[in-house]
Image 1 (cartoon, rainbow, N blue to C red):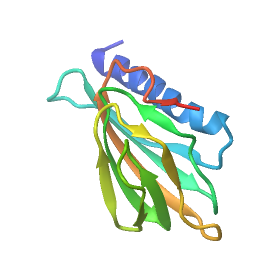
Image 2 (image 1 turned 180 degrees about the vertical axis):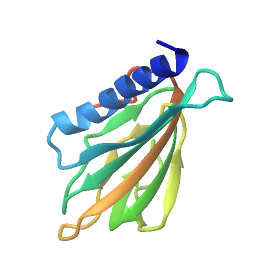
Image 3 (image 1 turned 90 degrees about the vertical axis):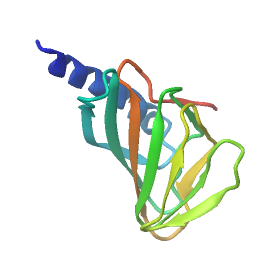
Image 4 (image 1 turned 120 degrees about the vertical axis):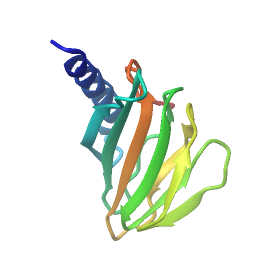
Length: 138
């Protein structure tokens, strides 16, 4: 097994750890892996992307991100209400984006609509060795 396969396996494990808590809590979001790869020119770092689908009124459980995870979030469709750390709660519409610093707390991440679905693409730059990308806080 070469380094690339090991890195891919580690990314898969991290991705499943990240997606698992939000799915296990049944809070109304669905997390689907989109992309994962070790970053070849940044040893020890990986790029992981997931799609988060929110049904009308759906939400993710409050969580914190891995200490190494820099995140870029892009609203693909609908509108997503988000609060990062102690910042203000904001609504982002399709085509809008934001970033989250490493180790961020994410107390609010939900569909802003009770009648329309929403989709978010979350892209993580993370230490390949991180086993859990998110940890529920409730």
